[in-house]
Image (cartoon, rainbow, N blue to C red):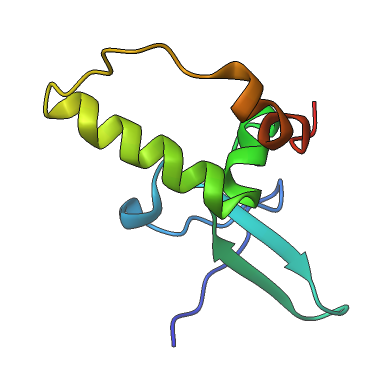
Length: 89
């Protein structure tokens, strides 16, 4: 365990290993708090992480693109429409 002292503005240095990292801060009580490393997802991309099917489709497509495998036929929009309507705007 290491002791740290807050400066006059209430800041505590976590050390260089945590530089430029994002944290979630939770106040647990008057004398306790929790810091947890976090990754931030832009709200407009959140749908992708909420839908395993969509995420798998996108990752699969990206994998095929990296290998240079492109579709030779356009997608069937009528077939895809129910899946796309289920997504939130």
